[in-house]
Amino acid sequence: MYFEKTNGFPKDFLWGAASAAYQVEGAWDEDGKGVSVWDTFVRIPGKTFKATTGDKAVDHYHRYKEDVRLMAEMGLKTYRFSIAWTRIIPDGNGEINEKGLAFYSNLIDECLKYGIVPMVTVYHWDLPQALQDQYGGWENRRIVDDFVRYAKTLFENFGDRVKYWIIINEQNVFTGHGWLMASHPPGKAGDYKTFYQVNHHAFMAHAKSVLALKELWPDAKVGSSFAYGPSYAVTNKPEDAMAKYDYDDLQNFYWMDIYAYGRYPRAAVAYQLSRGIAPVMEEGDEEILKEAASKVDFMGVNYYQTTSVEYNPVDGVDGMGKMNTTGKKGTTEISGVAGMYRNPKNTNLPTTDWDWTIDPMGLRYACREITSRYDLPIVISENGLGAFDKVEDGQIHDPYRIAYLKEHVKELRKACDDGCRVLAYCTWSWSDVLSWLNGYQKRYGFVYIDREEDENSGTLNRIPKDSYYWYKTVIASNGAEGLDD
Ligand code: BG6
Image 1 (tube, helix red, strand yellow):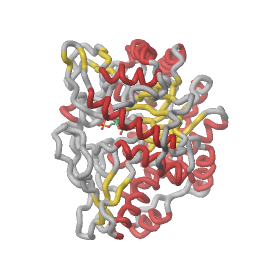
Image 2 (cartoon, rainbow, N blue to C red):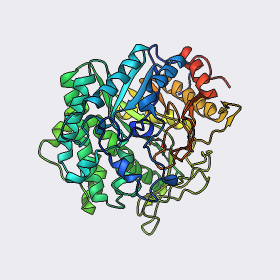
Image 3 (cartoon, rainbow, N blue to C red):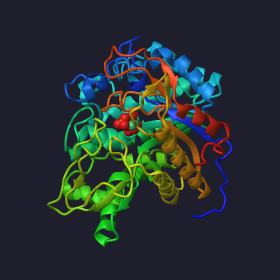
Image 4 (cartoon, helix red, strand yellow):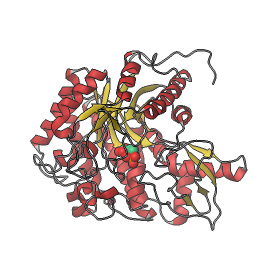
């Protein structure tokens, strides 16, 4: 759509930034915390960049007061963070750990002290290792009850103060990496049958948690966050258009349709049945998924890039290509599903050093698609640029990050003008964090953390980057300033 002038952002727009427990907290074995599957996985040789771990991460566990103070000084409206299941219930389904509850209660209070709205993610991938050992974690339906008990513990303890809840972060990513690519726990490759089964369990955990939350706190706002990469057909050949449809049904709508409608896309189910990889569902599941979908308040979107799609012949590439985890441009390999689609590089757009396509308009496109298909409000729960940063005379000049975010925010404003109901924009990430597979050299934050891959490196001191001051201006003016070229 074209509008002569913008209406700007809504009045109580939540300008935010995000983090995740494993990527920032550190203190991996303190105050009764249990071991998570990530604590185990990072210790397997070759799994992470230069064997980096989140043992210490950026020490948010001990420095959260300093971090929240910096957020307040910036004027941040919302802080999205996740809770580590292993701090609350160290073995996943046994005793509650009061010290874990106390940590998050204090963090929430610290945010509220400055008027920062806490936006809490229940699950950002750090499953208790004990559940993996007891019954295979997400592969077993028993996970659903254990997850809901954990989620309810959070709702009961924090629901009086937390009004925004994201149940699961990027279910598509952790299951894809975990069961198709072997790059996240439990490290399995090409196991589509289990992949879909695991996803069904996660959908049920999401749905039952939504219902539990609404029963306790009807006024809470809830959704899950999907890693949404809208797709573009490479050409106007009908087979490329159909490949795009296949891609969307299997890679995008498969998750968003459940969150919004409580049902799987029919073409995806037909495909699964033809291959014998459809998930086993229990009687009543469909009703629960639908009921939860009717109570979801927003679609959470983690937006980083769009994907190009073209037809892939039956003898074409099949599987996920190698990822770039080093920051050496051009080392990503093409992925595809034989007989359906493949995802070549978009030659019209630039990329980051990690080969992620930079496409600000894709963010507007994502909002438009969600608005047209689901008519739900939207929380942008992540968006940001992973880059190498350099300290010069104690300062970090990151014009590339400002340029990236500025263009995305401008497109988001257009999405608002288009009628999309966008409630929040959280950048990834608040400070530099551990990038799961890419170590500490891939930096995303507004706040620089003095540390490298080596656990003993750096002071862990916090230094606001230029982008910190830029975002401060944007927030203070509710997006009226800081966006001009
Ligand atoms: C999302 C995750 O996938 O993207 C974050 O929710 C993650 O946890 C972020 O860090 C950026 O990805 P990466 O691989 O560059 O760290």
